[in-house]
Image (cartoon, rainbow, N blue to C red):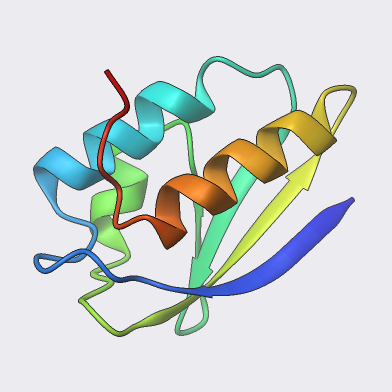
Length: 89
């Protein structure tokens, strides 16, 4: 299992557009991926779960990844969050 605390840098936090980008990327992996924020945990592959966390800009979240492709998933999603959840074209 890989886990790391990250800061949400996106100006609107984990809301519809940014959460959608995160969920789309998370769904590319077979690993179990979750995001924790203020005592709540959400499946990073669920748009409703991610939005329900209510993580605003500057919030600290914990990214947890477990599974066969955890290293690739962890690196990609960490980078995505660190870059402000901007989708790579």
